[in-house]
Image 1 (cartoon, one colour):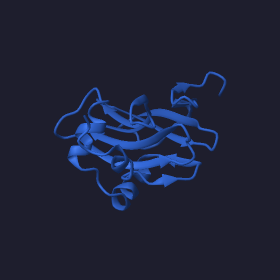
Image 2 (image 1 turned 90 degrees about the vertical axis):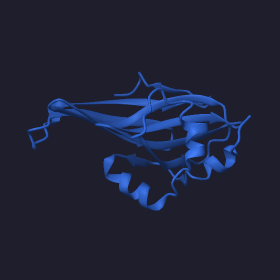
Image 3 (image 1 turned 120 degrees about the horizontal axis):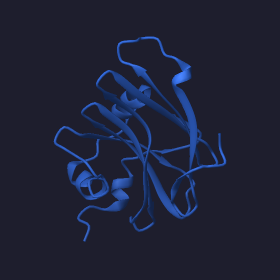
Length: 165
């Protein structure tokens, strides 16, 4: 039995109009303008869907999509050691998990930095551009990038879109 109201959990995620861009450039804005999620809500609604978590992992509420009549869709930022992710999660109206996907991230490993950014459009297509660079090279090379898309379906599933790109 939930201890915390799902409706209150959702209130930490401000509704936004689409399209919207998600990248590391916006994390400070979300952190500064959005109320932090209390630990009891993180334990009840986020940690139950996260496969990995430690005491150093931070969660910042980012956005909630407007005009999703049969579901609730949120995006939060998950910051861990050398790995930062924007995670999109869809729930049914009762708060049951429908789907969870990382839609943008920064991952540092050895001498590489892998980075992806996402744009969510009005028609629920998530356009993603991903690339990697040698961490010692300050010049970015577009040849190391690729573009792909995901789609948020009306049933709440978040899938790779094979028709795009």
